[in-house]
Structures are given as C-alpha cells and as structure tokens.
Image (cartoon, rainbow, N blue to C red; front, side):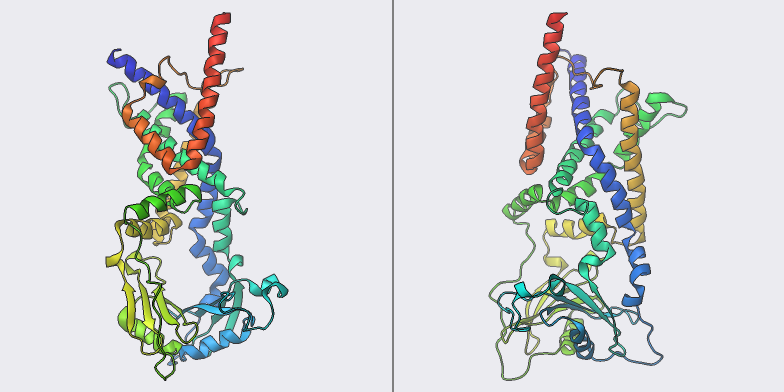
Length: 442
C-alpha cells in the first residue's frame, strides 16, 4: 500500500468518526454552551439579585461587632432542627456575615429540636444561609441555598434541571466532544494542499469548512480544558479519573480522621477568637469557619477565596487553645490537585473578568463551529441519502496504532464512550453489509 492510499484511507476513517462524534455531541454542546453563557455571568447577575443581602454600608467610624454576636443573631432566626455548618466572616468592610445552616449529622441526631427528622417539613431541613449586618447584628435575610441563581444555573448547565436521569447524557456528550476535538485536529493538520489559515474570498461550503476547522483548532486548548474539567466531576468517567488519580498518588491531602480536641477544663474558643487565630495564620485570605461539634470537636477553616486558587488551604485547630493540629496549603497540593483547583474555577468563570471574557469568546466560537458543521453537512448531503462521509475500503484496517491505543485508553477512562462505541460499531457493520448487498444486487 503506497503512502497516499494509506493517508486517504486514514483520512476517510477520521472523517467518519468525526461525523459520528458531532452527531452525538453537537445537540448537547449547543445546550451546554448556551446554558454556560448564562452561568458565566452569574457573579454580575447575583450582585444585582442579592446585593441587599450580601453588601452593607459601614457606619462612619463604627467597628464590627464580635463575630459571636452576629452568629447568635443568625441562630435566632434559623429553624431549631438545623445546625451551623459554616460561618463566612466579612472579607471586606462592605461584606455581610454569612452563616450556613444544614441538617445535623446522625450523631448529633434530633436532640436540638426533639422532633424526628421525618416529622419535620422538608422546607425546615433545607440548607440555607442567613445574612447578618456585622455592625449591628441585624439579620438582612435568609436564603435557601437551592434557590440561589448560581445553583439554578449550575443544575441547568450540568443536568438540565433534572436529577440523575439526564446526567449520563451530558457525560456522553462530553466524551464524544473530546473525540470530536481530537479527530478535528487530525483533519485540520496542515498538508501540502491544505493551508492552516483561512484564505480570504473563499465562499460556499469551502468557506464554511476553513473557518469551522480554524476556529475549532484555535479554541482547541480551551475546549480541551473545558471538557476535561467537566469530565472530572461527571459520574462514571469521574469515578475512573479519581481511581487513576488515587493510583498515581495524586489525591489531595486529607485531614487525618483521628484528630480531636482534649478538654482542658476551660471553655472552647468562641467564633471571634477562632477567627482571629486563623487570621494570624493565613492573613488576608477570606475564610470559611466550621465550629467544633461536641467536647472533642475541632475548629476547621478553609479558603473562601475562589478567584485565587493559590490561597487554598485547610486548617484544623484544637478547639480549646487554638493550636494547629493540621495544615495543608498550596505547597502541599499534588499536581492533579493544583490542576483541578485552577481548572474547575476557570470552567466556572470564577477567576475574574478576564476569565469571563475568555469564556464568552470561547462559547461564541463553539457555537459557530457547531452550527457551521451542520451547515456543511446539509450542503454536502444529497436528497434521499444519509449524507455519511464516504468510508474508503480498508479504512478501519488503516487506523494508526497510536489512534487505536488512544481510543482504547479513552474508552477505559470513559465507560459511556466505550458503550456507545460498541453501538456505533454494530451500526457500521450493518451499514457495511447493506452496502455489499446493494453492490451485489447491482
């Protein structure tokens, strides 16, 4: 087999795979991109919706009240069946104090309210945040966490406001989008008769094709980052990724389970004392505090600074004297942990305006690439035909070894990709036999 024949067969194979990948992924890509555009601007939208809860005007010359006073005010308006799960002290003088409440653990049981959980209304058990003015301990309002715009937008983007029933479909689309991206790069790769950059004045299907290919590859790095970060928190592929991460020793540091505080005869640190202790250890970083539970409980603190992943930390303090029992900062993160700590906030547009602007350009490019792909398909397709890209004889046997190895690896990593690939192989076998019968009949 000469080189040109082998290249032609391989190219026809990659065209065919690229088409199947686009057929499966593109409807979901359109939905994910449009809902993602909405999600990108969540900070600005929520600033307008919840500014009256999250922002305060500091009185001239006034100092913030002790944290415990504001936390007590929040506790007074929360349902008795909930316990404090997090406290976010103000990061700036204009920030409200946020106190998060949620259902108690089984260990804590129902002692707080003396009402069995099954007998309490579901609304009373919902996680919520109470917003308090830190200068006068005035409760600004209470919000059910599921009712926030960001939570609604996240569920719309990741599962179309459904539960687990559609989550697998989004994962399937992300898997084939990765295949679509990789095969697209192969098909674009410059050749002697195919320039890498679009040429001016080209019209018709060829014009659509050159811009479709160029933008798809130009946005390839961003596409790869978005797909891979999305896959890490998917259900089936995410489990595989985490298994590989743990096997490679790349899991993030975890707080040892045996840590506990020993009562010393004195009281535990209050909220204000714990906050001051944490500020002394990680100055200038917004924090989220978790109070101790019981006499052997621990004060825990973690970074609440989403725009700056490098400030990430986990801190555990003795509840009585504030001594450090565990501390893990950015320097202790694994390479995988650092990649996800940056990649996931980037995927969500949480790193700042530059991040939002870049994702907006990316989304616009994805929309064009997806729509232009279908425009080219209908321009090529003849009436009464399926419009599948032509597959040359021997194309499957011409697949390069590296592509076979990569395909097997992706199928192992992404179970839904493997299952759907088997279905497509069955379809291809059926199409091949139908073609042979038609040729024999002719």
